[in-house]
Amino acid sequence: MPAFLLLTFDGIHDVIKAEKLLLGLGLACDLVPTPRMLSSDCGMSIECSASDRPRLQELKNRGILCCKGLHLPDE
Amino acid sequence: MIYLDHAASSHPKPDVVMDAMMGFLRNIGANPGRSGHRMSAAAARIVFEARESVARLLGVADSRRVIFTPNATVAVNLALFGLLKQGDHVVTTSVEHNAVARPLARLSAERAVTVTAVQTDGEGLVDPSSIRAGLTDRTRLVVVAHASNVLGTVQPLAEIKDVLGTVPLLVDAAQTAGATPIDVDALGADLLAFTGHKALLGPQGTGGLVLSSKIELSPLVYGGTGSRSESDLQPDFLPDRFESGTSNTPGIAGLGAACSYLLARGIEAQHREAMERFGRFLQKIRRIPDLVLYGREGTDARLALASFNLRGRSPSDVGRMLDERYGIMVRVGLHCAPWAHKRIGTFPSGTIRIAAGASTSDGDLDRAAEALAEIARS
Picture 1 (cartoon, helix red, strand yellow):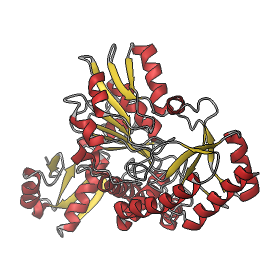
Picture 2 (picture 1 turned 120 degrees about the vertical axis):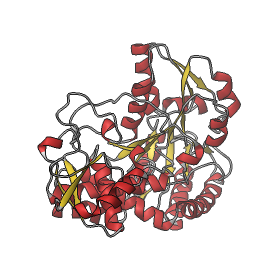
Picture 3 (picture 1 turned 180 degrees about the horizontal axis):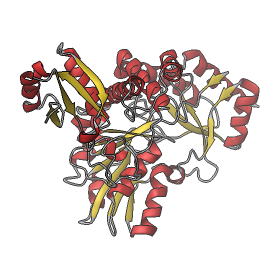
């Protein structure tokens, strides 16, 4: 299983908002440049631990996490 | 030196504003959100927090709806040129600033937009029923300055909003943002333009437009946003849709710090205190023979600014005397608002305007009143 997953966003405002949310919830995350294969999004993405995927997906489904997608490296 | 020209631009700014601007320039300096490195991220966090602070201060739940612009004039232009189409009708008031009057004149020539400027009363107050009477089936927008920059009269926005039905309201809050409590969401204002450098106590070169979720605008400026970079098309999401090009990040850092400062102090308490102080000043200058005061009688529904003339003297002469003899800085003339001066009969020479601000003391206003009395006697 990959160690990291990537959250992608429309724009930088949503990136920073999500970073603040995740850090506030105690979830480890890192701002990184968006890989070229996902470049139809904001130039920055958030790298999270893949083990947090269920929780991140739930936050996204509930509209709390404003990301566009959750991507594993091979997806 | 006594600075009483806060309606033109507030001075001095709180130390936290200058510290935030210097902190950005000295330690960060990168382009917010344009690159993937840590300094670009740090810059983006500053812009994000500033947007959140402005949203909190203006009562906007979703800070994405706060669009940063260089000033209120650009915000008004974005709203008017972005919304109005060929043959649309606009209702506004007879005391608007040139920031509204000039774009509307251009739109009249360019898109055959027609304008009804509803007469205010002699104190600059507009009757909401007059606005309702001005609406037609072609009315696309109502534009109202929350407060006149000449008279300081504050318009009854909630009552105005009540009579508009589905016609959107654009509020020009250049004079009121930071001076009086504003709750955009509670008011239901569709568009609100603000400047950062007046009562918000931020630096010049900052301002913005608040958009409601119901409003569809075309951008005024197209270009790079750091998002959807492979596409020639402008992003359709906020705030990127309306913020092409590198932002004024040092200024926005200062504006964010200023809004946090004001939120901590409380706008309502500050306004009450300012009006008590200014009410005492108004009482003093009313006693000066030959001083003609315009605008509202009392301190309700007004800001801490006053326009007046001394009979037999031109405003520019009085302004020069106040500056040279007493070190008191005020603004004289038309204040970029000829409509308001036509309404109160002071066009084209204008008035002398004294505008207090966050740093104004009772002593400052006492000295201004004494100086005016001396000039009137001389």
